[in-house]
Amino acid sequence: MILFPNAKINLGLHITEKRSDGFHNLESCFYPVPLNDLLEIIPASKNSFTISGATIPGDSATNLCMRAYELLKHDVELPPIQMYLHKMIPIGAGLGGGSADAACTLRLLNEQFSLALAVEQLEMYARQLGSDCAFFIRNRPLYCLEKGDHFEDIDVSLRGYTIVLVYPNLAISTAEAYANVRPQKPAISLRTLLQAPIDTWQKTIRNDFETSLFQRYPVLDTIKQELYQSGAVYASMSGSGSTIYGIFEQAVSLPDHFSNYQVWQKTV
Ligand SMILES: C[C@@](CO)(OP(=O)(O)O)[C@H](O)COP(=O)(O)OP(=O)(O)OC[C@H]1O[C@@H](n2ccc(N)nc2=O)[C@H](O)[C@@H]1O
Ligand SMILES: Nc1ncnc2c1ncn2[C@@H]1O[C@H](COP(=O)(O)OP(=O)(O)O)[C@@H](O)[C@H]1O
Image (cartoon, rainbow, N blue to C red; front, side, top):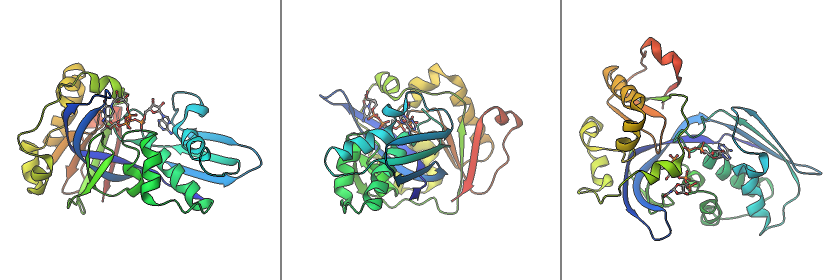
């Protein structure tokens, strides 16, 4: 059985407070985008895990796909599997690719072996693998709270817009990004700001990671400004970076030097 784990972008990201467990509470809208990995699982006589495409740091035992399998196997009976991952989503990019792979492993195992686990149970396992992993179980636009692992519905649609992702070949550690942010309760909640028309977002919707990361990596701010100059209605960093995305009313041609980056665009 095959699934195509997809990336996400963050439409706004407020880091509201540091928690007693060392993590941070946040508010953000997670939005799925159709940039995909490929994940296949079939029953086998012994476990194997093959990866192609982009190189993932760490060995296969620490890969989130294997960790998802082991986590589930602790509680339910699972046969050995042959797992294959083709990695397309850039790594350490703020696109949630590792979490998407882990969530899809849980979803695939649930289906392939008729485990009949409910969405809430799958989310409970996903939370143990990463803060943004549970999002990829429902995998639709959601307003995310707490560690980014509790959800409310939100009426936001980018249908008909072209989304451009620019990955400047720079991996940023999520833990390091959080360590350099000063949490702050927003005057107006992100939910309220997102309900206004998209052409107001440039002035109102922010990602709290940008201040410190743009200081450290000025190229990120430059890319964001260039996306606006190319006609974006809204542009931002996704998650803890380093991907900068732009939302356009139509397909766009970008400055020539963007060929130095990994650029992806699709009308959704
Ligand atoms: C920043 C966000 C925003 O969507 O996305 P990415 O940029 O990673 O895609 C997420 O909060 C990332 O979630 P995820 O990548 O799953 O993080 P985890 O593996 O759980 O945590 C990595 C590290 O980030 C910090 N962390 C993470 C989540 C959170 N709410 N507070 C934190 O302080 C902790 O230091 C933790 O050890
Ligand atoms: N299947 C996977 N795909 C990507 N990264 C993975 C995977 N499994 C484990 N990781 C680890 O997760 C970290 C990056 O996660 P990723 O989801 O790509 O970044 P981000 O959290 O910025 O979206 C890397 O340190 C990588 O080694």
